[in-house]
Length: 210
Image 1 (cartoon, helix red, strand yellow):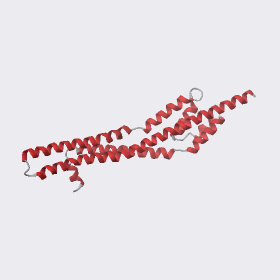
Image 2: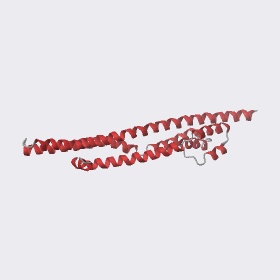
Image 3: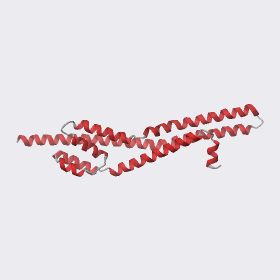
Image 4: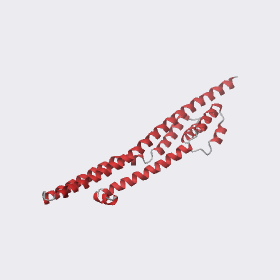
């Protein structure tokens, strides 16, 4: 049986399932491109260099080496450095929250597709079984294949819904793991910057007192 014939056999519920599969695919591809770009922009050596420069108070050197960086960790560190005379911790927390929101963009769509698709599949199956029982009530047991054939076709929607959910849950979990890892990285480097800045302040005060 061809794919189009299988699709038609599933009944009208296959149309919203097709929409769910298309929406999930588009979002997954968009998120893959987002993370590919984010990981490509990561520069751990530069983050370490910023911490070293911050401990020495070389702010102009930091500004020059981070001018064209799109690394989310670097952006958090730069935000803290720019607001070092006010509230470094709050500035970095706000920037980290902004970066996390970008990472979580459209994740709710994938989550919804994972939940809704199997429910739509079951809904289609229920409709198909109701239709089969109507046939059974009208024709009796003279043609049992019409009834069993209807039930078999109805189960197509359940299979389609489960397929969409299964194929979506793997990238969804991967994206969530990337968000958790990125959050941990930003927290780690933000703490390191606070310690480096405290070291610079202590060194400055000691030098000034001598």
